[in-house]
Image (cartoon, rainbow, N blue to C red; front, side, top):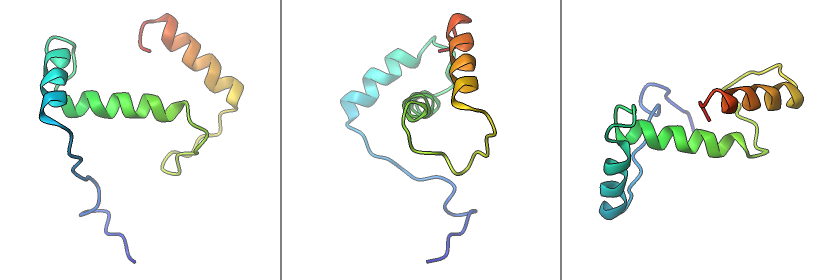
Amino acid sequence: MSVNKKTDSKVTIKIPRTLYNKLVTIVSGSGFNSVTDFIIYVLRDLMSYSNIPDKSENSNLSKEEIRAIRKRLKSLGYL
């Protein structure tokens, strides 16, 4: 199975309309450009707590360095 990066760069995920409508309310005035941007942010945040390595990102940071960065970002209000 070959993967064409041009056609496989994004996929569609279906969610219930009621959930989408609630997300629209949350996103409006939040600084996110769209519900999609918000969902991507939330999913990336959740994935950052998993033990599954992200093969698309080549990081040479230790777990301790990553923890320190997260702590700093949280203290700055980004997380």
